[in-house]
Length: 270
Image (cartoon, rainbow, N blue to C red; front, top):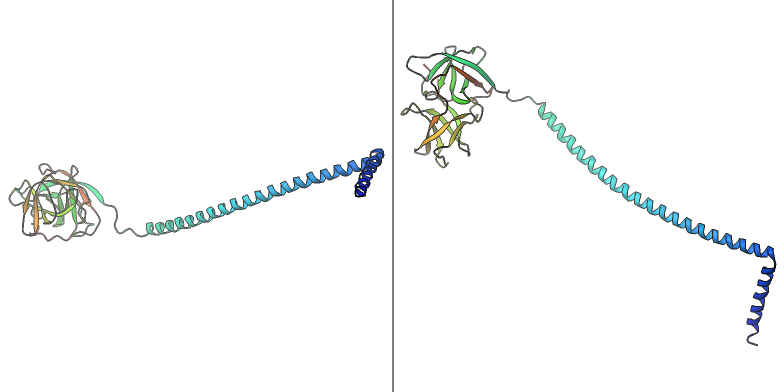
C-alpha cells in the first residue's frame, strides 16, 4: 500500500507524456512556452549585464569628472595667483622710475688747467643744463680716469692723483668699500682709503667703482692693490691705476642721473 501513491504519480506522468507527445497542438505550445522562457531568461540576463555596465560606466565617469573638477579648481586658483602677480607687476612697472638710465657722453680735453699740473684738464662740454654741483665720472679705454666738476662755467677734469679727485670703490671679490684719494708720496699711484680694519684685503686685489656715490656706474675697473698700510682704526691700500694720463684727449663722461655723494674736498678747485 505504501507504494500506491508513487505508482499513481508515475502512471500520471506517463499519461501526460503520452498525451503531449501524441498531441501536436500541446507539444507545439509546450515548445513555444519553453522558447519564450529561454528568450525571457537571456533577455533578462542581457539587460542585467547592460545595466551593470551602464552603472559602472556612469560611476567611472563620475569619478573622472570629479578629478577633472579638482584639476579645474586647482588651475583656477593658480590662474588667480598668476593674475594677481601680473597685476602687481603691472602696477610696479607703471610706477615712475626713481632715476633715468645713465648717459655715457663722449667728449675731449682741449688744455691743461695750469701749466705743470697734469692732473687737471679742461673738457669741451656744454654744462649749461646741469646744476653747478654736478659731478661726472671720467672713463678712458674702459677704466676710471677721474672725475669732472663745474668750475667757472666750464667743466674741469680732476684725474686720478689730483688732491680733489675722490670716488667710492669696491675691493676684491668681497666688494670691500673704500674711497679713492690722491697719494702725496707717489704720484704714479692712488690710495684706497678708509678700509674697515676688520676686513681682509690682499695685494693683487682688483679695485672697481661701486656706483654708490652716484658718480660712476658700478664695476668700472680702477686698478690693482700693490701695498697695504695699517693705520689707526682703518686700512689704506696703494693702487696702480689702469687708466693712463699721458694722452687724455678723448674720454667718456658718465652721468648716472642719481643723487651724488657730497665729498668734502680738501681744497677748493682753483
